Length: 167
Image (cartoon, rainbow, N blue to C red):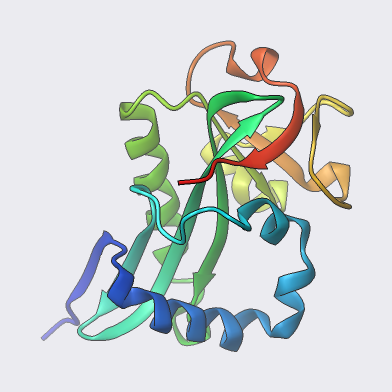
């Protein structure tokens, strides 16, 4: 019998398990990352946050935070994406990313931004942000600031400082 994996929207009841998986996977240093500063003061869950379970066990989760860029809304910050190390390399992270990007596109979001590695995220359409076009509220390696256009021309329309959109 094959295992039963389910992917669904995150609920408040999922937050303790997600927090525990973040601690297990990323450690305490995760809180000093600039992306965490963007998420401060925003709801812990948006309509785009998803989780994958094997029975009752959380094995992967992704957070998507509504953001503004230079005051313009219509963008999301992807991350953190976390996969339980016991399930790494099995496609659970890729599946979640594909699901949230498709949902955001259907809803009319224009751009998804993240801080990550282009070799991994490039397969989803993420490309480096042109230098100086988009600024995070703290230090970020500019080569790791990536964006995926969900609407034609969205990248050219977005410039300025990134801020979380309060709920």
